[in-house]
Length: 100
Image (cartoon, rainbow, N blue to C red; front, side, top):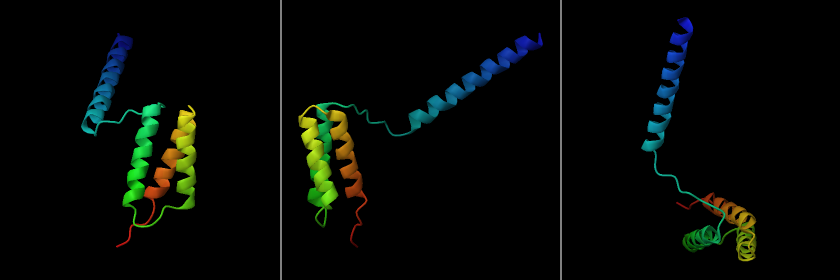
């Protein structure tokens, strides 16, 4: 009898946890699904180009070399490596100080 009660309580606890996790995920903004595809490479290249255009000063040399290498790798079919470099370039660019 006690084992049956313990199982019911355990099942109830699992269902409660599942419901809490499911509701927490539904309240946040929708996640952007990213994959290692040539289309995603191009999306990153476009975002990087836009970020460079609106920057108030020239990007660091590391951003230029990472973006060039990332584009080259994406074009050569090495999408994972290209995406890694393009993301790193975006991160560096986004961390640049914004003038007052």
